[in-house]
Amino acid sequence: MRVHKRVSSPLGELTLVSQGGELAGLYLAGQRYFPDAVSLGVSVDSGFEEVERQLAEYFAGRRRRFEVPVRFAGTVFQNRVWRALCEIPAGETVTYGALARRLGVPSAARAVGAANGRNPVSIVVPCHRVVGASGALTGYAGGVARKRALLDLEAGGVLWWGSVGAVSGAASFEGDDVAPGAVEAAEVVAGAEGAEAGAGV
Image 1 (cartoon, rainbow, N blue to C red):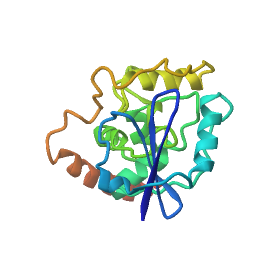
Image 2: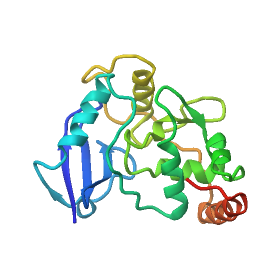
Image 3: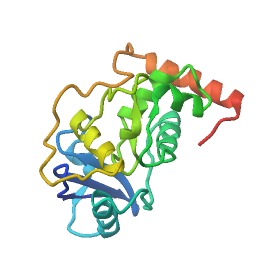
Image 4: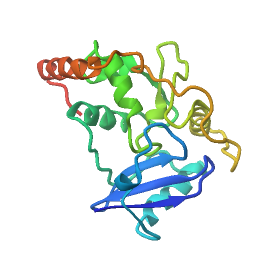
């Protein structure tokens, strides 16, 4: 059974979702792909103490990596991408193309971008550390301002409460201009390439 709790943060309200004792979702207010009420489950007042503690440490600049169990519930390809995100150290960024190469599927940068944009566990699974080929902040489901704030925090900056508002600007992603069905096709290709390369996350 899924349960959720809403908590405050320097980035605004966060919605934490748990299933079977694992973190299944962490959503920023107003972010793209925010789930419906049924998918969030029952509202609770407790059960997220460890996640909240680690988030508080992270926002205070005292934590670089999260140590909470995470439930990945996407496609096989999405799960591979999301696990790979967890291996990007705080303070570093990688491009969509570089992440595709790490996964052994160098031709699937756009499919990687699409999967990155669908990450359901923001911040803990650090999709904000993936950038465009030029290093530009090409998009973030929670808004580019929040992405920039998170990267600045991880670079040693300070994230003040209320300093970053809700979603602003276009939250476009590397895979957003892919025609319908193309991402699924790219995932098939990526799966085949990964199998040939023996790649896995």
